[in-house]
View (tube, helix red, strand yellow):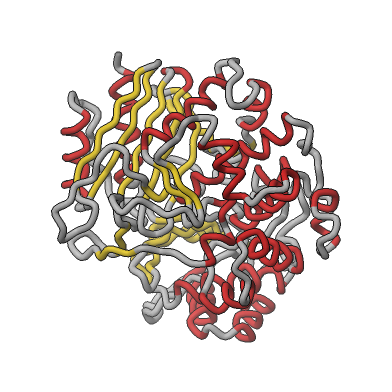
Length: 488
């Protein structure tokens, strides 16, 4: 995994996902095989009581049973049944396999277990399975040709890129807005950016901190003091929540029934988010604030409500007033704004069988702070990232440099090879130096925003197709461009 978490990627937490294998156990199966299979059978039932029984009987006791059950339910609803693709490795205390969900999305999972009989499941680390080794694109000489090569090699409808090197901004697009139609994507068209909305949300929180309306250590109990909440949330600070360490439930996906239950008949965006915030805070915390990393869309949804209450405006208006307008971003949209007719359509499915899809509805409003319903052109997104690069170089801009510096102070992720700050992922590469940024997907687009401070370089790449190939074509593009400039 080469970059930070997003709406549906690199999900690592204790027993957070359902893993279901439909194949019978082979002769000579190990105790770990049998444990994994038993877990799978419990998941296959989609029966909460049977899942709970498995956890009581076959899991370690370091995490409360009800907490484990709660963390698994969403994935069971969204992904089961699962099937085994292959077992990669078994060694003392761990079991590494690749599985596939009902949507043909492959997931890489490592099960940690006790080593004395009867063995028990301790935890699962799960993320989207890595793709086969990708083609080396680093010797490109023309951006347009690079895009066309990656687009064709990966079977995607369209791809856009913005490269901000020094003071020069270069934009290129290739491909069609929608498969089966002839209209091609052009430079100023907006794309869905998914979880890249998180660094935008943290920028708004940073601005409110700069203005003294909020503070890094403002707690949920202070910011939402009139909201009913479990006592376990009250001490969580804004900074912890921006770091995904506030103990907030993850909410990595929703079914229709859950959204309808939360939203009810409410249509006002601010009140929809308030209803969702109260739903989040009515649940038990996922962990004690400050103790565990757990990527949380719900956490950023809470931040959007806090920002609304601090400024007295709907979150959509805050994004326009505090980000889009001061930066002159004329091809960026959020929420209820009417999107231009000329824009890329998202697509779902596998290469060769992609179908155009447009997601809309109250879910986009609920999770606006996490990136729901936000569309930006690649150039606009590069300009936004440029303000953070400016701050990282010690220059004041949209935010004071000291605020930017703190927003980009990362803490180690569980994988140990990257850090997560306040809406910004951080990864070091031997030849490229440090890469800071975020990626995003709503399942029909994939977007990458990357800053390489050492090279004074920003690269934005977005494709109009979902799927969980990793590295995604968008990330392949970013790394190819960065490798090119690293040689200069």
